[in-house]
Length: 541
Image (cartoon, rainbow, N blue to C red; front, side, top):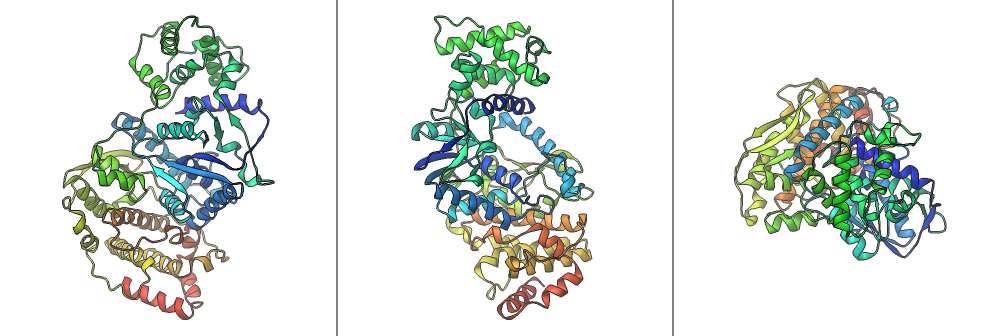
């Protein structure tokens, strides 16, 4: 992955010094890599959005809405594509990436917000759910893919004659007829005269500069390094480069210079790639390797992933009605639990939602075992999880959720939008009562006050030092909330889907989780808000 980033930096170094900034034309469509967009918007927002306290979802919603409002003002029609599941062939890579993200999460947890190393980012757990919620709310066209989104994006971009907006370096390599817009150079906040300053990368321009046959771009990508392959050349290519850059840049420059000198006369594109790969491998004393051929094919003919999923699962995933986690559970009986910013001296926050996941697995697998990948202290461990229940007919699913929660709650006085969050909060609070702590009660009241007057409290000048135990309690609530959202979707929403963006603002709730602050805010409640708060307390106690 590191070499992939270096390759992208190398290409960007060239393109940023070549074409002048262009204006994105109005009355056009734009294919957007959804995952790249929500990562970028969350990490590059100004002011910076919270990563340490579980996320700032109201703030994130504002950022996303502003982005799409800018496109609308410029008469640009967005088509958003989101990643689905990854195949078993990438499991080792995904576990390695999870380990790397775990290290980042621990750094974020133990570092003051302004002191975290550059690039040390961890996506809060509800960001993707909130992003999809906004797409639906704003009627923005989107599709959630069953596999990786890259092949679908390339196909759609060339079919619709659109440029692609992403941060994924693979789009430098794919043959995109209208080119690639990198999010780092897509200056949507600098809109002027209903146009957006941007920089467009085209493969032909790059190949022209390096005198490289375009057919060899996939060969360059496969030996330079990506998620699938990387040629270990022990410094051969770097030593042959005259570039003044650091080692990784010299290596990439050396690879390009070598490929540009391969004799391709009289060959078709397929034969060109075969000869170039063979000569590159021979040049560093390596034998032919099928791994490189498969990596090259990924760029030449990007193929959609074909999975044997039940039709109702496929359709609901594509429409964003159920989470893509169902794909790996149904297809591979696995669940990769994303890294969280939490108290690493305690057990994983995912433990709190363990019973909910067991029912989730049971409904999808018919009661089969499922393998989870989660942290054990600071290491990634895989463990076999027995599922609960069995696959049910769709017409019976609406009866299940409250059975799973094991509570008969009187939700008559609770607004529809808060019924699922209240069920989750009761479940979470009772799970934590096995190890009662005063801060758990404070977190409960902070959540309830947030439900009642999140918007009014958002800008309140309440200051309090970050506490690991409070962070961990909220992290456990977020795990329960997200898994319950996904279970509710799977059960055809027996409880109304809440507006996730309004449920949780980490910095605010961390400041609220204090006995004196809670009492101070309670005194400000009046009328309907006071009545709702009392109703919430009654249900939760």
